[in-house]
Length: 601
Image 1 (cartoon, rainbow, N blue to C red):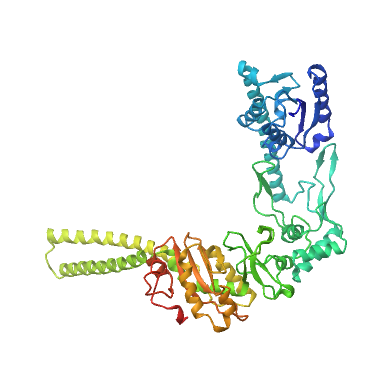
Image 2 (cartoon, rainbow, N blue to C red; image 1 turned 120 degrees about the horizontal axis):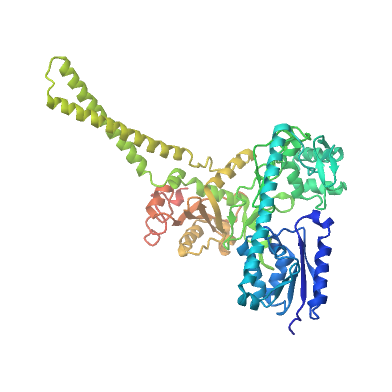
């Protein structure tokens, strides 16, 4: 059964200040009056309300009741013949006129009429098509509303810009909105206006004490979750409705206002746009809660925890790893924190699906072993022929310049000794001097090009170790270097990659596996595959040993295969190690070779 036509009253006001006024009552009473006079027994629905929602940037269409109504119109849930009652068209939208007209078009095309209660004008599909004046009036109304909002926006931006400049120049209080541990005192009220001439900031000591306690715990090595849990356990009253959460704790610890700093900000794209910094930070603007040293010590390390514990496991590959289906893999530790593994994130698994797992220690060794075989300079700079060519060209230019200088010196010596300086000799000297100037220019250009290549080479990432360090500082450095060169790492613990090349490394891995690995061999778990995706768009698959024997399993590279973004010869120059099938014709197109065998590793 199709829904019956209704009269829908849509009310909207932009700011919370208007809630205290008469806006809602006025709009609803006007809708009720229209229904009694011209409603033709239509039932009135007054539930469409956007209170404190702006129509300037289309916020009421994105998250407001009008957006819900438009969705219902498109889905056919609103019966044709229904009427949308609005005080004026600018209640529907104050967006730019074309977008606002599109909203009106969507409504009337679905057979829903729009009535403006101020001028009692009715917009229907029929009268808009027959009388263009309705279209003109609607467009002018939308344009006027947009212009009014745009003017207000510009004025407010100018006012707040001036306030931020005053704050930077005189440390003046500019707003009653402050952080939860700060209070504003000395504000004089004149109706809805506030006088900040005698205002100042002071600490809310009860909340400041909580902030200091949070920083003490953070410096001692507590994580965000543990701090939030402790505050909840002690029944410390939260600030606002959100309660104590890891997000709230992180915001407090990272907020430089605790050391008195104020960063003026503005919104790009209006009130609901992105909040960005506007000018330099202002120091000593707010009352200080903690010292600079305490603030710096509490800041999160690479692990994401404040301060970081000395024995904290630094996750080298988190954020880079994906399983064969492109799902992220996170670190997981068993009871007591022993034998951590990388496994597929639980929220990406279907019911009863088992995650892809790989021992964290062994996978990290495999990745570092594969990266350790790569010449990063050649990988990120490509072929070094250009640098070699420039160096040879410079040598030739220098040699020619030396020859010309010697000829000029000989000519000058001949003239000094009383030799003739005829026109022919003079012309030859001029040619030599002209060529000397050209050589110097060519030499300077070549030097600039070569310096550019050398600077690029100096900034090329290098993997400083092939071993997995246990020191947290070195692990952090290694983690940063991995992120400097890799975009992601895809893994196959069983070694069965989408291409067919995995069969040849699997045979070799099975043959070379220790005798104690019978179970691993029977389960096909003697080889894994790791595909490295580099930031320059290249990629390569490394087949690695994956024998489930012993705690500290070796991480040897069996073969490289399937290079992306480079030829086999290019990969041969980039990689200092080649696969085990140097003489195998079948795999020659897959594995670059440099004459080094996997059995020698």
